[in-house]
Length: 376
Image (cartoon, rainbow, N blue to C red; front, side, top):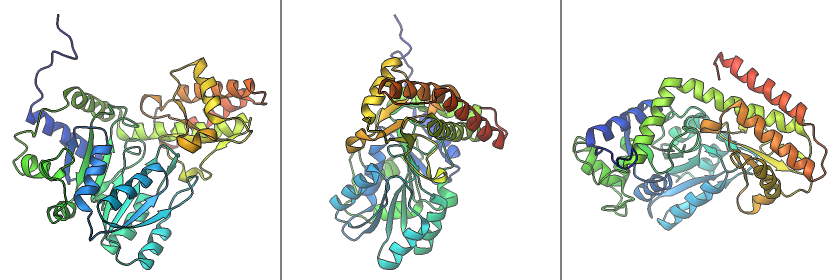
């Protein structure tokens, strides 16, 4: 008996390269794009270990948990690391980046997360990139959460290493990821004696054995199901139109924030300013004394398919995350999440106005869509 997930024709080099080309078009980049055979932590770590070493002075921006992870990797590589941490309810500014360069002129590497799905903020990459370019530092960007939800433009911004994953706004698989690599980044890796080689972490292996070989022979058997799923999700974005997909995410974020403010019950947006809030996911703060993770559990008891989660670690007590990305970037997912949170708050004896929240969410969604003239 045949099975559609098991009895597949081999995925050859030509199709693999074709999928890379489609990802490159999605990013509007002429840089080399390497699809890595694992979740996005693979190229995120591989890119740092390939380009950083004892001679590196890195500015590591921390606006959430991933920035903390990058700092650990950089230190493990022997780099001198200057951490620039800002409160998780806000975003870093280009002015703060410029001030860090002024104080530490030896900085030659900048690591930044574009959007932090874990904390719900997003950073102004275009403005920051202007500062980084003026200083000539290598620019490393984690765009895993932002791609598909907001513009990601490695070439226009001058990003040297731009890592994406398909599992959030792109609506694709978690087990495959990609990184665009500039010529400067390749040169930095080639000159780095500590850059991984003959390793699953090695980007240089892909450069020397795949790209330089004309992309004619794969390094190893590809993760076939994940590659086909990546191809399918890029096809869907192409069919819908990237601007339409991004508008849906912006609309879902605007609707969630407006609905939470109207709901009451001690909920408010965790990220204070609308322009600093990520379109991929909205974080909410529970102020009433109710434990956020308990509220999420009550809401999920009503419908376990809702895109709700509590914050990680110490944030579990106060943070609720509405993961309105991918197939959940819809008005229906937002309204169902708000209704379930309203019921959970009511169950804790708190006064809410669910009808007002749903009206506010609907109006905000429509305003955002109509502002772009896009049917979402």
